[in-house]
Length: 521
Image (tube, rainbow, N blue to C red; front, side, top):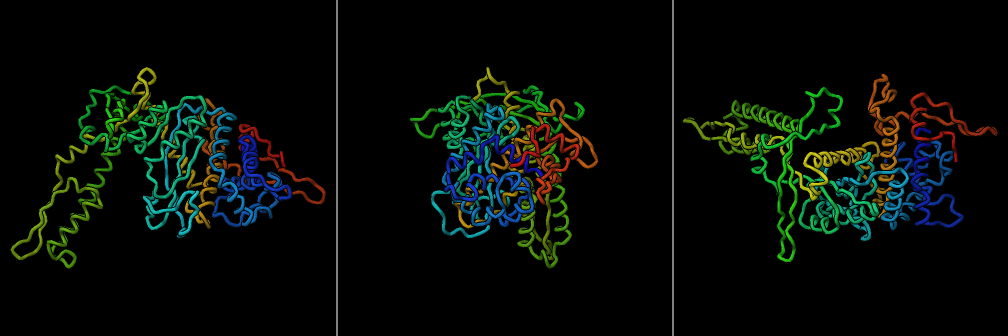
């Protein structure tokens, strides 16, 4: 049985099956409704993520019929495919309805929402596509598989618990910077009259996006890319001109004060010029941030790549004149490759020549001035925002931005425990539908984590999630793993199905989630 009772309970609270059935009705004679099939697929993602085949076999091995009231034979490959086809035309309505239900049912705070996109690789040619749905195309994949077509997906998660209340699928070749406005409008509709802060990555910053956000009275925070704040501007910053922000990263909360990372901030303004005379220039607040952890990491990474390049150049020097490096052309090619592969070309200086015996020679050094220029930017980055100074000072802007890791963590869940990538389906219509199924699973996954953490507050950790019983901050992955061993004894010889007593940690989790595992369909 595993976590099926939890999935069913949260599915009921979110109204997943009811929403799908309302938008995609079936004939009364159907063995299972589209909503029931989709809800079972959500449970499949959360209990046994694998390529979407043999769902029927999974349903027979798990207590699907007892918990969800769906017979295993109703989840054959053909029926699953027809359910995906059915919801494909109603994805926006399903996502919006369930997302709004999550906000209301669980009291989610949507005053701060974090937006980001990722790519999903596809196996297959997909030469024929349905133009009404996202198109698989070659792009810039995050998994570094340029040989595969991809689609992209965007998530908007709450600052309150990292809950994904909205998702969108996009064409594989769509530029991230162009997807912000449409998603922002969907978020506005979902949030209703509430005003929210949109936090994004550097792709959020373009004149078109900024103009639309300002016109819609949406506040935002995003880091500035090098296009907007160059390295020279960052290098010109001085720690003496900043104030300490007082922000403590989650990873440092259990550390001694002296061992925690420090953050310093200072503020000025920046004007984003319009491309057309008819459009207004946009004045933004610019917050420069210095992070001791980021500075240390940059210095460590630079020292590491310098050492590796030094080793490569040492081997090259010892091999001069050998069959591998017989002439200056071969040496030049190798020096160029080292500079590129070790990412030291900006400060590697080399003189290549020949001696009296026409043997190639090499003299090299690192340009200290170039190293110092790069080191001056260590730890620095800039945030751009239209937040009112009366609403948030520079330290508060930093704190609000720092929740952006929540959406990155959810993408880790998206491609990890829920096994979204890689995908292989017959057509792009079903791909779009499956992305929604997986995002609904991610919604439940995240809500379960949020409810457990709220339930144990003010404590941050609980025991029993690790075999050795050491305390741990509960994550959804740990919670679902702890529930995996729950079992159900099927009905037999007139006896009803029974649930053996869960262990202590399972009982505690079920109480915190307000789930009765004996409540069967």
